Amino acid sequence: MAGTPRFLTLADVAEVLNTSSAQVYALVRRGELPAIKIGGRGQWRVEADKLEAFIQQMYAETKTFVDEHPFVDDRVEQEQ
Image (cartoon, rainbow, N blue to C red):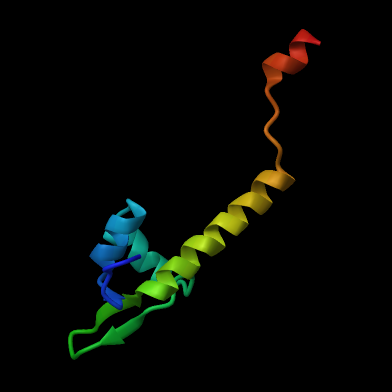
């Protein structure tokens, strides 16, 4: 993530992941995406390296899911 600041807002993370800020907040609150809470108003920040690690983890988990649940095209099975 060249040129990315060290810490990102939840809105920044949502933009990177192409999802909503509410979804990112849920990931943070569930502990799935590491973040820190700063300031008196409790603004959340996600370190860019932690976001990249989260993305890589999601790729690995998705690969495991796909490997364990192979896609079966019912149309192909019906033709046989």
